[in-house]
Image (cartoon, rainbow, N blue to C red; front, side, top):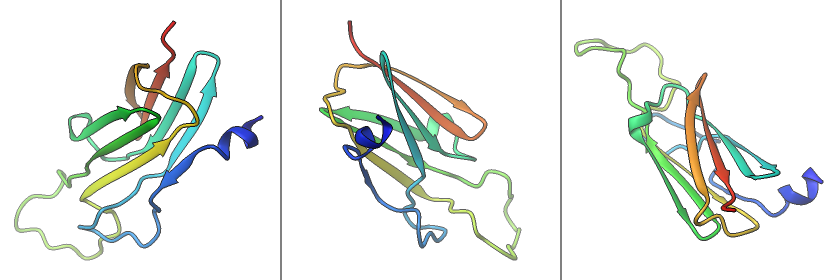
Length: 119
């Protein structure tokens, strides 16, 4: 069943070739549940206030910015591998999700979005 559902999803963007300061695309997992969908997005170091979630028809769009809040001014870096910049993730669902009841939470670096079907 999971294989047939996954073929309907279109993940836009890739996390390959990420450099600091450029747009990056976080990894995401999508699960169908009896009452809707669960989306998990890997957003370590991103604050909840820096994330926007939008739904339009069958498209879920997540965007925001990861900021480096741990270093003060006057610090010089020796190595930079983590992207501190804007990100986005767009997921197309096989059915309309507009009007779904949306709940979200951050848990251990993951943004978890519950999309509950309206009854």
